[in-house]
Image (cartoon, rainbow, N blue to C red; front, side, top):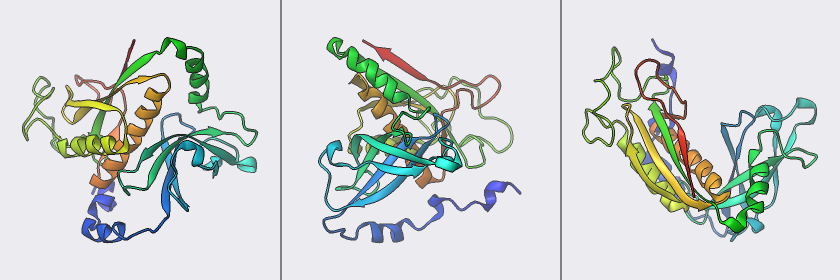
Length: 261
């Protein structure tokens, strides 16, 4: 018996019952979810707080803290890390007036955490903003079951060879389109500058595009689009991996391509 058979994922829970609670009025209050990149430089973490009114901009959002010893960003003897809000989006999961907020991470000394590459990048982008650099990013990803097996692939053996799947349509070649469509709509609702999507070369592999954006904005929108992707997949009980080579052998890899102007 596989270990995944012992897992009860969010997709197994009663969504109608969940909706009963999500539709309750919340008065003047607003739920704000702070999102940051952990010590791996790849993983995303989040926690939510209540605010007494809807924030209109990042300037309305207070700094917050978290335990960096649990995210690979500090040692246990002095583990407080600071969350500094840098960009705000609408929340496609809890809906208006609730918000998703991307944050930079600072140490208790207010120096950037080692995994906070945005801080240095933003300083460079500020120096060249007069040139109005534009970027677009193409994010490829692969859908997996919670057991790590590619979503939609046969339990034993492999699907048909590559060639059928790129920009494909059909139940025998496009695996996970519901997730892709939900991610797309959620990004549009959030205000993320997503511009398209398509099935990729390997079955269960997909791509979406973010941009064009100016300067640091493209990175902020890309990271929030990744959070939304993981969050949508959580509801479906599926995992999205950005692994550059999720399957060994003659199977297409995945990456994030950058177009600059």
